[in-house]
Image (cartoon, one colour):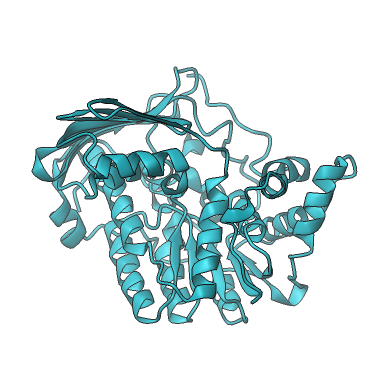
Length: 446
């Protein structure tokens, strides 16, 4: 059996980091598009919880999105992850060209963390929350998101959290409850569903919601192709316990990532919820694994197909895979009584009675989402995406549960009755047997 490609390291090199994050923000500023950036003189103090590649990327975009934003605290379960992130944020490779060096220097000036405000261990998130941060960025593995969000809102912090926001129905319910508390406390929550800030998708959705397609009859979203951009599980080290090994290859464990339909393809299904302004009411799915079958690939699938039924009988067909060597496709389509829409991440096209064509405007939506939140914080405006992203997360979770069990499911049952809780018995480094790969027709519906 051919194995998926593995990268030499899951970490970003400092050079790649500079090129893909700090310079991206500087280039956008230099292009004259800084009208999207938050304005204001009050310093917003940021804490980062989860210092892997995504955390490094998100905090960089946050710092680049506005003036007077500072990173003052960091927390991670692992010392090496925190150290790598801190190094990336505060170093300029010697062979960096002048433009990149200038961008990196601007970023470095906003990093105010000290040894005393860097925390490691299972309670690192709690230690970040007792500092004087105004806002936290949650980029730990998704399993931990509900508890960390709850703690952050209770501590009175604004929150940016990556998608997905849970891996099981219990977690989704917790996120919704925390979002309701955030409203009461007038705290902002922004989710990393940045597709909702891509200009051509925003404009296409405006057309759809204004009736350009008429009554929507159905659609499809497809995301098939290679694996995780070359990212592979790290080689297990002799001193790693079961728990540490699973945490360091979290993408391949359902209890930590939710499987790829939840962890990555939430973007595609979130677009469908957005277009239909609703969540599905039913689904039936299937899936399996044909290439990622070795033990290091945990217990996740490598392909899914789910039919979602939305209100008014609208059916959306989802198909997704992560299998090397396959043709690539990543798009969404909708058909209505007046026309059809095609959307990918570079353009949006409507054909029929109300034609429309719009292409990517080159402004990074990951900068937009942070600028929007910083503006809302400074202006005291309501901005809470918690319930919406929780519903998109549950959309993906119910598809996974249906595929794992082979059972048709209703939204009401999954949201209100399912007792599925993927949490381990205890959070400590030690023995942790890996759950078996789900087998449709045999895996129990909980």
